[in-house]
Amino acid sequence: MASDENSAAESIMVEEIAGSTHKGRIVRRFMRNRAAVAGAAFMLVVVPLVFPLAKVVAPQDPHATNLREIGQPPSADHLLGTDLTGRDMWSRVVYGGRVSLAVGLVAVVIYMSIGIVLGSLAGFYGGMVDSIIMRVTETVMSIPGYVMLITIVAFIGPGLFNSMLAIGLLGWTGIARLVRGQVLSVRAQDYVMAARATGVPAKGIILRHVLPNTMAPIIVAASFGVAGAILLEAGLSFLGLGVRIPVPSWGQMINEARSPAIIQDYLWLWVPPGLAITLCVLSINFIGDGLRDALDPRLIRD
Image (cartoon, rainbow, N blue to C red; front, side, top):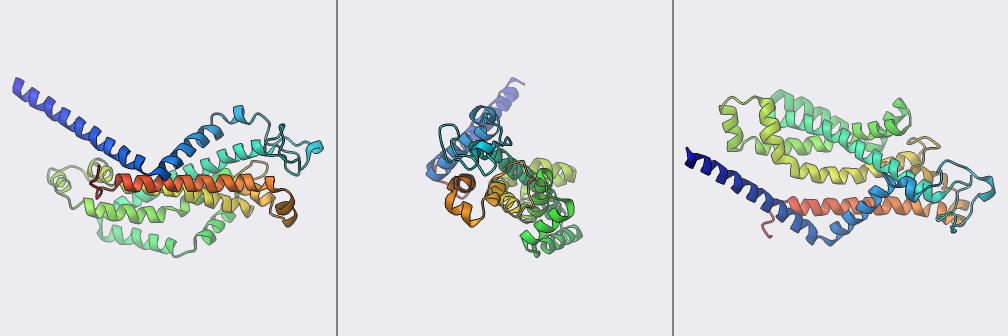
């Protein structure tokens, strides 16, 4: 009896050591990618800056207008100057980052949820279920993305939540195909066949055995998806179909500064939000590259 307990304790210890070793290997691979580390460091600064610390670093109201300070260049009072209604540009960039990043994160959560569910069902059950889901997926993918996005927003109306919903309803197709391919590969493994033979319900097999072994490519796809969603939100806001005025977003700020006179004479109105979009998207893409390399099981180098 004591020997059985010792054997069980030893097996648990071995599993814990193996798990910690695997995690350490992933971290080391990620840290070797300097661009990914730089992107992660940049986002670790930006995310707290625009969410919990926004009121601290940008105390001025981003909606408050001051007709005496219209179009002021950067100064000690206004780090990034003021726009053509006297609003502080630094505050608007900070609070605009909160909106843009929130849209990107929530939209990805929406379409990842849809794509994982549909891809898992298609890959695990196959047959008619697979055919129906894949035909619907291919039909949606055949429609140009921005055309479909504009159509959805025109139907449900512009706004913060509607932008999240529209982008979420658009991006699930690629995730569904990715998850389906991963599930098709995993479901043929011996441990899945053994679980089926012992009578484990399909729901339990998917949640306990299939999805956990397909998470690496899903995590990588999600990281790239956040960057894509930020660009889509910026495009919608630039077209006037995204976040409604006066709520600031980076795309909307660029939209407000698109006239030739403003582009030439008021650089501080469009360079900061454009630079913010560029740096955030690049950083998130670098993080995605690093995660892809770190989570690739074909890389045997420590």
